[in-house]
Image 1: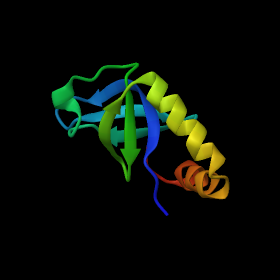
Image 2: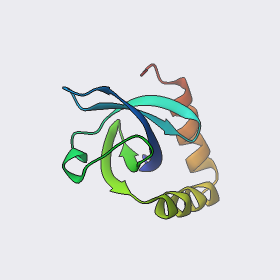
Image 3: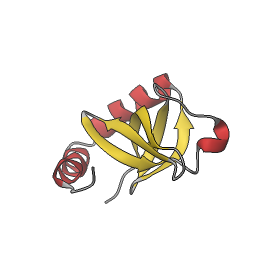
Image 4: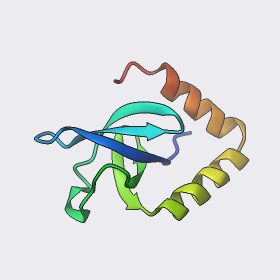
Length: 90
């Protein structure tokens, strides 16, 4: 199962290619933010991430509520985080 997981933008790594460094539950990964750039994004903003792409911009309270709901899913969420931890994407 693949989940959309909230992540917080840390920095824009490659402006020309819309790549941002994002913190996803303690895991820092480069994510494509092209789909949310028209909404205006900056470090500190929260996005919902799925398969390496930021799919939508969300506010902080929505991010925390989503993470709370994901944690309640138990193994599905922890398995997803394990895959993220072991991925080779930087």
